[in-house]
Image 1 (cartoon, helix red, strand yellow):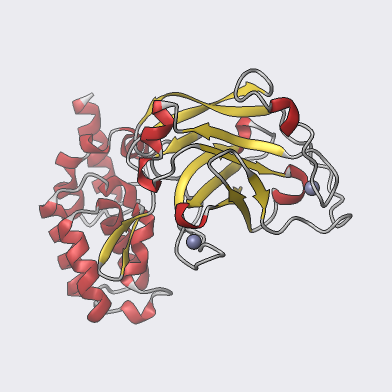
Image 2 (cartoon, protein in one colour):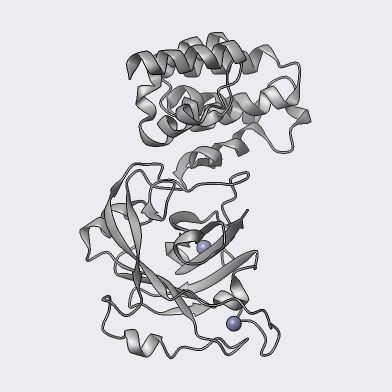
Length: 316
Ligand SMILES: [Zn+2]
Ligand SMILES: [Zn+2]
């Protein structure tokens, strides 16, 4: 295995590209195994994909910062370096992002956003002078179970919930409760206590940009802006499964999971709470293939203080 990893690193260095699926899998499952090899990748200027740098130590972070400060010949390389630092996290990366808010590095004017706005790629951000976590560090897989096979006692009742827009059945995408120790652990970063039920209309909401759901710890779930009656005539069948917590996963699950960090199919995009404007915190993701024939993720967020949840759907 060690020799094999050496070979993969040698290939990344030779090809000047770390986009090798075995390396990406390691970055998702056990990024610390890549840590000893990062100085070599950095020396060869292999800084893509950013997730290879998830377990970068202070010295490697310092190396990335030096490359940024030295200036990049093109915006794409600067973009890759900032993403790698966002994934690496840690005090050296944090200090650099703080400094670049006041003194942007060379070439920053070519970026679409400020350097510190890259931090959400690694699940963190600067909120004033504080670091704020946008995601969690522990996660549990969610497994699909036929609806009605367990959960709360009022399943029958929620089954009668109807969408105000199309009249179809509401789908309870998630019904979690911090009484389950796994859920309590996976949701510790959002400070939610009690039941968290997220119900949407698959037909009306699966294509929407951001769907906001008002939630209560008693399991209340109400769409903030339900579709107007009769406005939606798509024929997408609602899933018949519900997702329930299962075994423990790592901090970067790539399947359906509660907690940990979300998968982003494009740039990280944490929705802003529609009540207060703060960035919402990630809570769970559902791999669409677990519940439908679609490909992508339903990604769920929460702003506990406002009792507001959100779903965004990242399709392929
Ligand atoms: Zn509907
Ligand atoms: Zn809010």
